[in-house]
Amino acid sequence: MRVGFLQFHPTFGNTGQNLSRVETKLSSLDADLLVLPELFNTGYLFSGRKQLRQLAEEIPGGETTRFLKSLSKKRKMAVVAGIAEKDKGKLYNSSILVNPRGDMHLYRKLHLFNREKRWFDAGNLKLEVVSFRGAKIGVMICFDWIFPEVARSLTLLGAEIICHPANLVLHYCQQSMLTRSLENRIFTITANRIGTEEQNSERITFTGKSQIVSPRGEILVSSPRNKESLGVADINLKEARDKSVTPANHLIKDRRRTFYRL
Image (cartoon, rainbow, N blue to C red; front, top):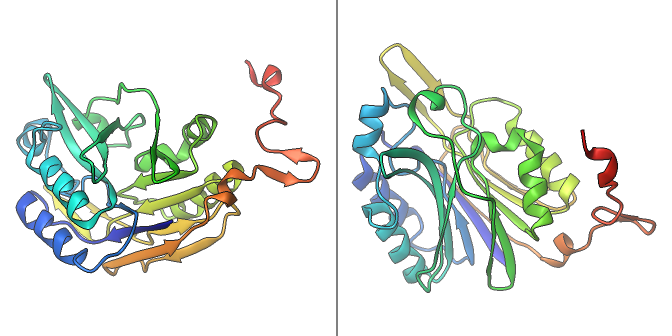
């Protein structure tokens, strides 16, 4: 299976321009699965809920969802992307997975980071795994990485690949994803963004270094800290299905759940 990510610098508040840039950058891509960053269509640093509400879209009725479905069908690949969602008065930091048939899976970020608690409502959907071209795919968003329960829960649900749209700012996040891959024996695809955003007196710089990591915790592809780039790797799903750490140890079967209860 051929998987990839796009790392780029979205222009804050300009959805049309961001969608157009993504389409141009993917014009020659040949892949089965592509991951775009968190909030790839709007940018990140909102002034407050009022501005967020103006930029957020309904799913599936919004412009960005229609674009992603069209892109998926045109490029014959599944696409995972992070967008701001509005639904019944709520505002969510969400991600959708779309495939060429037009099917869609929605995930809402469970663990909001820092300023996001001012802007977004916490996710309220259960973790799920979806199938595409023989692969079982799970989704989490950015700060979900620091909670190992998310990746482990997706693994127990059968995930072989975890797609990780992100706007990472802490310098050790990418390194931690090696552990998430290793401790679950899964592939992870982190699509981060680059650049700096300023809003009033606040300033955030994003750390780039998007990556694809193997079930052995090895970086297969990695991007620079501050350069737009498209990363692609061919992966063998059999590696994620083999949970044997040694001939005598199985990552899932050896779990002693009785002792994990508090």
